[in-house]
Structure formats: structure tokens, C-alpha cells
Length: 450
Image 1 (tube, rainbow, N blue to C red):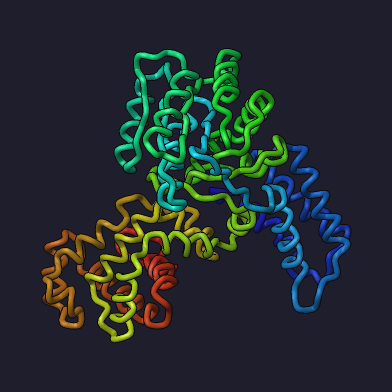
Image 2 (image 1 turned 60 degrees about the horizontal axis):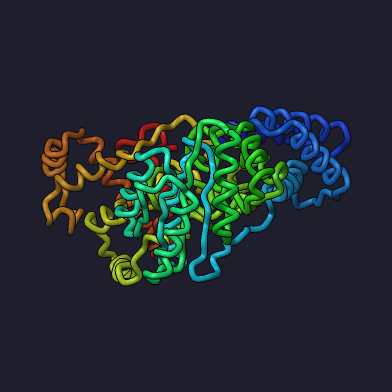
């Protein structure tokens, strides 16, 4: 996500490296490079031009303190303007009412049905809601089946009526079902098409006018760049939606949609989809996204994900073990499994400051930890409990049993020792971030040792 933009912005700031002050000449060259970077990221030309003009104006009017360089000052100004471009503040969902109603809209293939499930899971686990998913796509039986599968997966009820062909009636029936069954939130999934058409717009507008939702959310695929922005404008002109869910930000997204949508439709991005798992839905924080675009990481979001997955009782037990220097390979494996639950590993590691650039050309699949798990699983219970007894002959046996090389076992042993030392210096929650950083040189993650 934003890798190419991040790299180009970094190069543009190099123009000011070694300069003693910000001048009309050197800032003009930097702004030219930044504008090119934004256009390459598929940002709307008018927005890119206005953005760089604003940054230039503020940079030329700022005093460069002796404690910071012109490049650092320009980075700070650019960060503030990027956050402002994307909305500046976090926009909360309106979930008042009994039940509160959320209407999902978007084109086919945008991830609308999947994100209806993700949103239900988010509001159930984070906000204590009792949601109902309503399948109001009457054109695709597969969409109804998909919603039922997702509902079962996350433990959320799904209402559907395969005999009824009017989505307005199905939506009304779903709301009535929620009321009679004590559910305080209804998420209505609607039909999508491959392109915007009059029939689609009339139908979704009729549903909205009938059920009067608290929130109408437009789901759009970030991978489509400026097409996403144009589609958002068409939907907003007809629906006047309340916010956007930007999906597939874990893919090869150039970032233009995230940077342009707010300015074009004047509606906030409320959530971003960051992976395939049902937990992979994050509240959109403009300032944190600006941090990531400029390569500053996003440790706050990382710690929040850690907290979501961390069991407090287990945390206390682990803290005691770390304090007594009793952290072992069983604990190490438990930590790995916790990280796997947090989402895409490359995306998580990209939240650590400075890691985005190091990960640029590195592929990390969902099976990145399998080699590590195989090595640990080949150890005896005693070896996992007391790693210090693992000598040369034991390493050979462990390597053979896991189908790995002895040098990989050695790497893991060293990594375990380094992590153990790090965890002693950190509290239990921030330690997981440290553990992730240590994974750089582990077996199965080549090229990340640096």
C-alpha cells in the first residue's frame, strides 16, 4: 500500500537535503517532484496541483528552526496537508437507534458483501452490538449464500427471502425480524453491478428512502484508482451517502483513491479493508495514514491490533515468565499465532517506522511462519521448555524432523535469544511489536535480515 508513492515522496525531499534554508527555487523543484509523485499515484490532477501549491505557500512562509532541517520542516508541512486532504479527523459511525440501520452500496466486485460481514464483526466485537445481516441482492443467489457463510463464520444472524424479488420488501422484512428478535443493528447488503446504471441507482435510492438508514456506506475498490473516485461521485450525486469503505488497500494500490475521494465527494472515508480475514477492517485515521505514506509507520494502530488479540490473563502470565527469565519456545509459538490472527504480516510490519522501505521488494505470504512452526514442532517438550539444552546433535535432529537446514535452526535459536532479551526490556504488549521486528531474519523471510 502506497509503496511507490512513499518512495517518490522520499526522493522529492532529497532535493532539500544539505540546503540551509527553504527558498523559492529549491522548494519549487521539490513541489514539482511531489506533484509528479501524486499524479503517478493516480491522484486527481486538480487536487495534486492545489495540494502542492498549499504546501509551497506554507513552506515559504515558515521559519526554519536551527534544530530542524528544511527537509524535515517540509515533511512536517506535507504530513499535515496529507492528513487534511484525507479528512483530518476521524468520522464515527452513527449507530444510535433500536435497531440502527446501515445500508451498503457499491459496484459488483468491490467487496461489498464481504465488508458487510466485516462491519458486522467489527461492531459486534468492538462496540458490543447484536447485528443482523440482510441479504437484499435479489439478482445473485451466490451473494445470498456468501452472506450466510460469512454470518456463520462470525456468529451473526442473516435474514434472507429467496422467494421475494423486491429488495425494498426484503429490507423491511429484515428490519422487522431484527426488532422481533432483539437485534439492535441491521446491515443491509444490496445488489451491485459491473457499471453504474439507472436501474441500479433507482433501486438503491428506493431502499434508502424506505428504510431511512442511519448510515449509507459506499464500498469502493482502492485498486481502481481514479475510477473509484469517479464512481463515488456518481453514487453520491444520487444517494448522498454518509461515508466510504475503501477496500483492498493491502494490494498493489497506488493510493490515489484514498487521497482524492474526500476532496471530490466531500464525504469521509470511515473504514479501510486491509486483508481477506474478517478482522481485516480498520477505522480510517487520516493522520495515521499520512504517517504511513511518509514512511513514519503506524505504531498506534499496531498496538491497537495487539490489544485486540491479547488475552489479559495470558498477558499477566507471560509478563511474569518474562520477568523470571522463563520465556520459552512454547510461549514464542503462542506469540506467533497471536500475530497471525492480527492480519497480513507484511502490512503489520509496515506499521513499524522505517520498515516500509525495507519490505518494498519482499514477498511475505500467509505461510511465512510455517517454517518456524515446523522447527519448533520438531523439538521435544523438554527442548521447548528449556532451549538452553539444545546442542549440536539436537539441532541436527530438529532440522531433519522439520525438513529444514541446520543453519535455519541456528537462525531461529539466535532470533529467540534476541527476542527474549528484547521482551525483558518491554512491557507485554509493546513486546509483540518488537517480536515482529525480530522476524526479519527468520527462516522463510529471506532478504529481511537488514
